Image 1 (tube, one colour):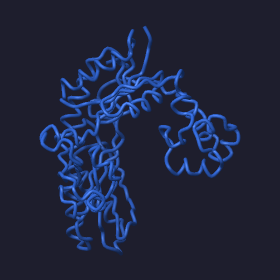
Image 2: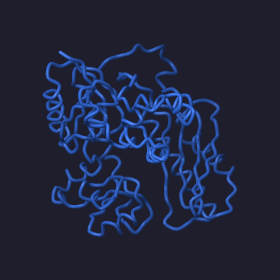
Image 3: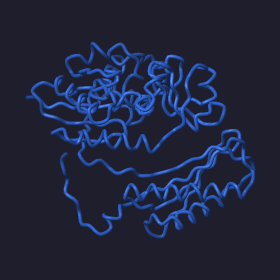
Length: 355
């Protein structure tokens, strides 16, 4: 028996949910975002593997995506469908003996004791497909970092083991950007300093890295490059700290009444979301993106934690009134920063639990 971490990651999640309802689109470039009209403002929320071959990813503006991949099929977002599929996915993983850490609506870590890690991973794939109809990739590692990277190498619908035995063979010559948590800018900065590979980063002097990136980030980068990760799989991770909604105007908006109306609508949607999460807001933040792309926020702290729609709406309007509207607005958002859940306000300390 051995103890391993599995990283279970649904493949092209949003698109996969849509393809399950529209199997005739399989094999075609499919993009999901906004109301499905690529000529309207918005960004891609999900891209099929076929669409990604054209350089389209999540976050790509819809109009840019249409230019890069004009033959793509564009579909509108259906948030409720994705939330339902995610709930089925997580419910399936809770059937696995071990410790479950939900990392997102389409991915999770599972700490398991097993005599055959690869077979266990295949069993997890079969379980997820049987419960949800969706395919997943599974990374096997001796820690969260290696399991997470392994799942990336496993895509689509595969299993890949990444551990101390094959770490250098797989990772040594890759750029630091291949590491979980290292972005393009940091990788470019490292390259400018002569650190062009994971091996270079692992062999770099920790004191030198600390002097450049800071006393915490520098040593952390070296630790990542060695494939080491101290963070354990947590059965009860921290709850989400915020919940927000946004709306992009198709034409830049200057009408104050229309803007306030949208703030009210978003605030009430957020209040409804909080009810579904079983949490209470302690602060409400409004975000405005003014032409061309200047983004600002203002927040209001609530007198006591709540999810009362009228209170959240009033706070959102108060935050909105703090803005100086000198330019047209292209996007407005309302976010609730959450505190304790309603149950936590009356319950005592909770014990940890295992799934």
